[in-house]
Image 1 (spheres, helix red, strand yellow):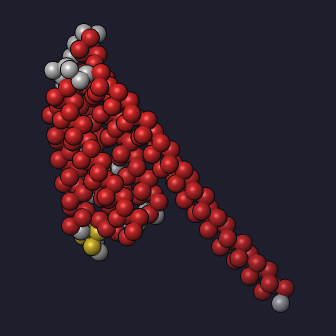
Image 2 (cartoon, rainbow, N blue to C red; image 1 turned 90 degrees about the horizontal axis):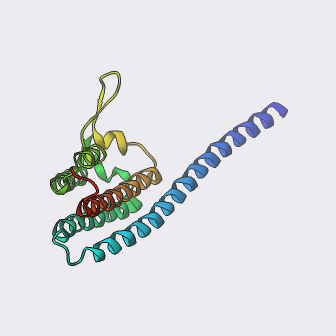
Image 3 (tube, rainbow, N blue to C red; image 1 turned 180 degrees about the horizontal axis):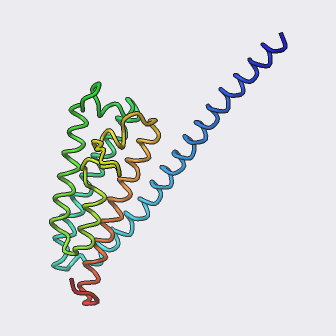
Length: 193
């Protein structure tokens, strides 16, 4: 009887430890998502201030185009976030295949990347944007390829996927801010490309 009680106690403690760890990870992800949301608000305010400073500038046209593309992309990512909250990250999959939503996500993300890269004159910034926003397959050191959606979304907890999308939104705004900074610097003649 003592052995059964001891075994049940160990199993109970083990089960509680795993769920405690999962709860801890979920809490950390949620905190990081909240931090990203706060950071994004601050960054958006900085972008708006810079745009106002350049209001009467001939450079505003490319900034407005970039900003419009970014706002549309952020709205799309917010829609995806909401769908993930409701249905989980399986919205990207239909069994082993990619769902219409998954294919749309890849297509819209590639289109955003393509359009903003056309506006960026800095080779360095364009390369970094292309690296961060590419939707290419991921290759391991062992030459094993993983599809982008499988690599970043399949099988992960919902909160992980929400954090990944939150980070995409943050990087989107960070690059827009840097794009505007480069325009301002070039306008002042500090750097030439």
